Length: 150
Image (tube, rainbow, N blue to C red; front, top):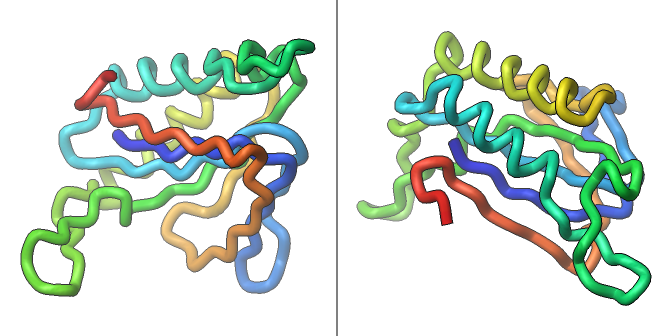
């Protein structure tokens, strides 16, 4: 499982011209799911994101979490995070999980974050053509991979 976490002052997603989800301060998270992912990946990554301290404290240091700033999450499924660019110029996506595997893990991820943060998670729509807008605050952008736990 891979995630791109961006600290935002605002973010939203539109599907077919209609706003599907939006947040103010918080994280816009792009989530990629591969065939090898399991519930353990969901648990580890959701825990890390919910508790990540990248919001400024009174001294300007990144010491506050989402809960500390009453932040929210906009979660977007993103199969292209597992693009292979080894051959040619057209990326391949064979590592990305098929919908029958990815959707239950995506839904489990939403539920895990909602439980950890005790609030609704805003989302896009799995497999939809989405238009995502955000204002990256900082900018702060962090990539995490459950198979490479740095």
